[in-house]
Length: 387
Picture 1 (cartoon, one colour):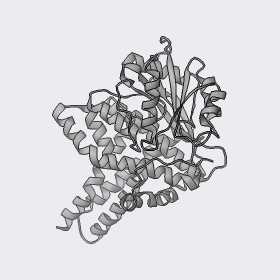
Picture 2 (cartoon, one colour):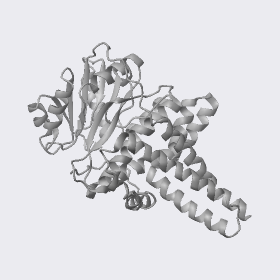
Picture 3 (tube, one colour):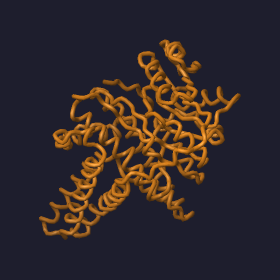
Picture 4 (cartoon, helix red, strand yellow):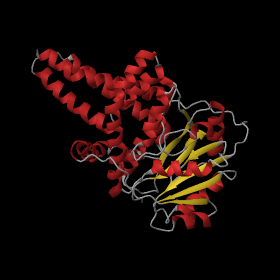
């Protein structure tokens, strides 16, 4: 019985760590560069904005410099400041939406789409109001979306000025693992990625019919899964990049709560049905997405696996089979090596080695976020403070 208990405790984490290791390993190598010789597209950068007067002009100017042929449309959604006026002064088209009952990014995107429907563009790229894009990224995203007839997601990273807290730097690295390394792995394993909410390009023919009007806190995740169930695979281009300013340490926990509570809730509801649909349809794409959803956020998985290892090791010391503990230890070590390889290849400039040593403190700092999932789950949108 004690042997059986050890295997029962260890097996779920063995499976989750094994899949994560496969995804990380598959995502270490960069994707093949896309052909730059693609036809130009009439594209719109669609920016939903709520009370962004302090930064919207800088965002518009930065996007215009990076994508001089794009039309920029700002949706000033339920604003109490002069976001729309400042966007217009910076050179964007701005429209205003006021609906206190239907609030959220999804409703703003639907409002912008309705405005564009009279003279639709070839492609629409959704960009958050505090983001920047690398030069040429919008053009390559729009071209890829038009060629494939499906959404294409850019890599989405967090950017911080020098001298930020080590916990912020580690958080930025965790975002890189999620939005670049694991995204590449998911694409290679299943043929399709997920949407991140910003840096998302859509051909108009698809964008025109999407169910955008939603108050869901992770509407991008839900949208990507809905498309997958329709047989539409989201592309991913790691050579196109959109960056967001990292949240201040004081605000970061609230931001992470929205993202990770939304992910956990979506995984709870959709991982099983996706895996069931994958079996019925024999779909590698749906199977990879279902398995991806089963893997908790990285910090939570490592914390829970370390606790599980302690429990299984305790059972082994009490006379139980030692193989579950040994396998867990080996898989945790291999995942750590894969993360170290990802840091070496992608993030040495982002995260100094001395800050990387503080990763255990980061795991403990994230613990209240996960405990809150069971006590005061965050389901709505929150405005994030920035450094």
